[in-house]
Image 1 (cartoon, rainbow, N blue to C red):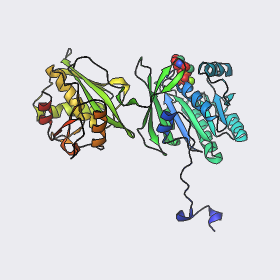
Image 2 (image 1 turned 90 degrees about the vertical axis):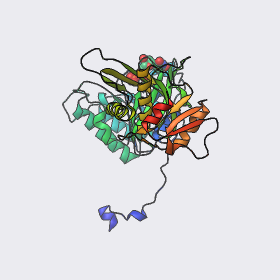
Image 3 (image 1 turned 135 degrees about the vertical axis):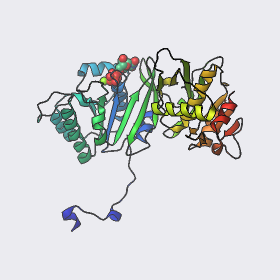
Image 4 (image 1 turned 180 degrees about the horizontal axis):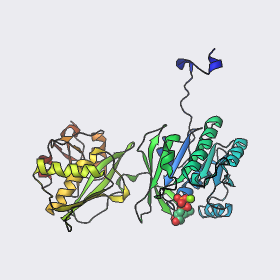
Length: 402
Ligand code: TYD
Ligand code: MG
């Protein structure tokens, strides 16, 4: 009876653990949750020129040693692809390439070739027969993606879609596709920096918020497998307004420098600006500092920035942001060998964050000797090499840095 209706008993479905194909670029495999899942659809978004095609050509080439890979380009000519491959020194690669923008053609070709991986570069160049609107419009992007998702699920082909992030409203950016795909990765970088962060913002097959780190070189993207301390700018002397925190992005700790600048407001309207941290959180922290720490920034502009273009979504950044702001306001540097983290509550309490001990161990590994953390995050047996001050209230934390 079940076979007629397609209905099955849940407990009779065999649960093979997801087989995954390792791409062999460990930082990319990591953000995917351990490799590519057959039949999955992954969207990689990012600004034009950030390195999406470069990364995917490198990935395609690695993977082509094990499975068939079809790379469809709607952006560049095959000659351009070949030039890039040469620059990347991917000479003897088995990647099959196709210059095509008609999505029905792409689907038909892929259904015939049955590749293990199909790359679409980019989804904004794909057009469907059935629609008259221009390439890149929301309807074209959605329809093309829908056809490719169907192909992936029916044939078990892993599909990677490239999507340009665009600011113009008329052009459909990756956002309109996020709900249709299994995994959404964003490629980010700081202006002028060679570092490239790839971040999972959604992943049906792994941890969201996982980040992978690459550096752009003359021969393509190079993995940065131990990035935990690269987001700290090394000042020779301690400077006011800077403190190092231990963040935890995805499954690993990351040392990042949080900077603040508090300055007399030049206009009638004071500014509160944060880059890399949630904007609303900053206003909240400044109010808590005033009410529970006796520190006022009235009439002052406050800017907070996370070094290296990292975005920290977790509340563990509260205490670092607050301490950096107060350090700048007082023009008193915080000791260079100090790290901190912790959530700040509206009542002025410092709340614990997950993985306290792991964060502290990472800090000790990188030579930090002092830590100001929520009291509940202080490990009972301590951490070798680290003097840990557990704080309960904002006022105590402010006292610790003065
Ligand atoms: P690209 O992958 O074409 O970006 P996207 O597909 O996201 O638009 O990368 C473009 C930039 O990367 C371009 O400015 C040149 C630079 N680049 C390198 O620095 N090294 C390299 O090996 C390659 C292939 C590109
Ligand atoms: Mg490209």
